[in-house]
Length: 81
Image 1 (cartoon, rainbow, N blue to C red):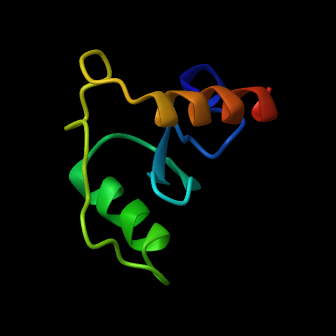
Image 2: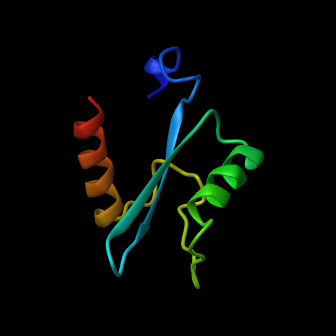
């Protein structure tokens, strides 16, 4: 997404959140990975629903992989491009 930041209001990343039980997914564009931007994105996503548990990959894009999340990201990418 970084190469398209000029066409999408400067958003470089997409925060994806998936309810692994129901497979319901959210995607929210963010300009950078700062705590303030991530909090804004989570606030939008959890406006109507608040999770009981939240598991993250701690922002590390290389170590932890979740098949459900990776599949959603691949599907999202094909829909966008």
